[in-house]
Amino acid sequence: MADELDRLLDEVERRLCQRHGGGGEEEPAMAKEGRSAKVLMRAGSSEEDLDDIIDEICNDSSFTKTPPKLKSNSASLTPERNSVVVQAHGKRCCPVYLGGSLSSSGIGTNISKRTCDQLRCTACDFRVSLFNDYVWDQSCDYLFFRNNMPELSKLRAKMIKKKGARAYACQCSWRSIDELTDLQTEPQLRWVCGKHTE
View (cartoon, rainbow, N blue to C red):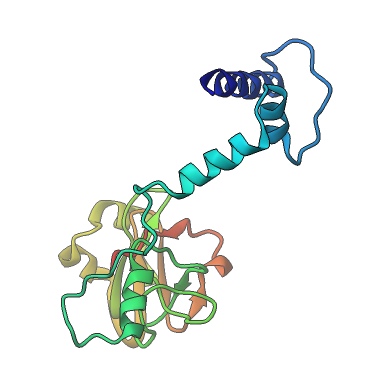
């Protein structure tokens, strides 16, 4: 059995080396379907041996047959809320939406259009800050954000109060948004969803 596996691994390694230019002459191509089964059969195995291997893997006690139960801090959560919490852990928005302060935040999808509150800039590798009910003054420039992010006390100098708007900024880019906007319509912004934890 061990010799058969060694031969199979050698065959796989040889084929990978050939694909990446590391091997010599190419062997005639085998059919794509059943390739590993044919290699095992050529090595002297029988169909019964293959069935035994599959049964052994399926009956292994280290594989759990029931999914792990979710632990909840509160017994009053409904199943729908539990599924949302599980779905949200470690997920990213697709597509990513920006929006005013009246737009709900969370994981944005095509169905639930929510603004992303976990944005990260791939240009400056900085977390995007957002400020509800503010817009940026027209005089803002790159150096202002480069020198003052993320200190709110310094940023307030160029923030204008506007109900329903939201001001976004990292160290290299900034935007004032009033309504729900798909980030793909703003190609100059190099912002991505940085994963939601809750």
